[in-house]
Structures are given as C-alpha cells and as structure tokens.
Length: 162
Image 1: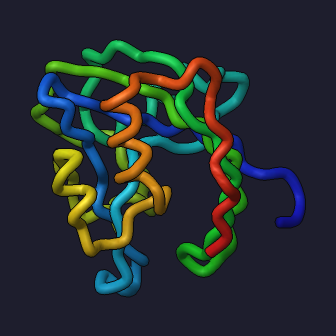
Image 2: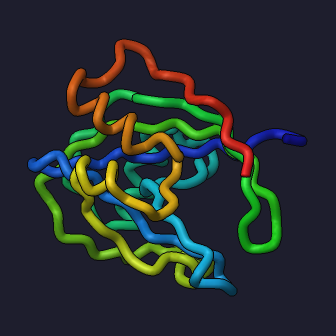
C-alpha cells in the first residue's frame, strides 16, 4: 500500500439473539460483483474511532440505540472499488442493540449506488454462507466472540489485499 491508509471504524453489531448485521454491497456498475460487510466508514475531521463508529452506524442503518463496546479487531486492507484503490486501517468495535429495525437515512451518493440492503445473520448462517464476506474470517471470528467473549486486547488480523 502506498501513502497513508484511510482510518476506518467498523461495527460488529449484535442483536439480543446474537445475530450480526451486515450490509450487502456491490460494485456500482456491476451488481453481480457483490459481498457482505459490517457497517462503518472513514473518520471525519477530528472525531475519534468510537464517534465515527456511532455516526456511521446511524447513517448506514438508522440504529442509534446501541451499547458500544471494546475494539475487537484491527486490520489493514486494500481493495479496488469504484475505479480506485482503497487502503484502510480498520478498527472493529463490538456493539449491542435491541433495535433491530433498520432505516438507512445517511447513505452517501456512492453508497446509494453500491449498497443493495442489510440483513441480520446468525452465526450458523454466516458459517454456511457461500457469499463473499469481509473480513474473510468473519464467520470464525464471530463464533469465537460468541463462545469466548471479547478479547482482552484487540486482535490484529492478517492484512487483506484484494
């Protein structure tokens, strides 16, 4: 990766049944090139990672009634999207909510062209999924989280270069 990575806060949002909320994204000009991913996005101005996590979650899902927990995982990733390369330093926060109805109101123009919807997934559904999910080890990471609880310090995931 070249230059400074975009600082990103992501949210592993769990409902009372331990389902995780994922967004269904795709290339803006190719809906068949699709994947699932956690809510989140880049830090704006001088906001903290936690502030960005809350803001992005509200914008992308409409969910504001959350208990934001610790940072679970950190990873560096790089991927092509919408005609350019994105280099990111991502922090994944644990969050819990009882609010399962979603109402995305704050999508950017790019998100409006590239997000097809949202879905709550059980751990079993995620483990059985054939779709592409990012980070690629999410099913295994979620199962470990549910079985063992959050790590004492954030796990540093292997860099993912697509």
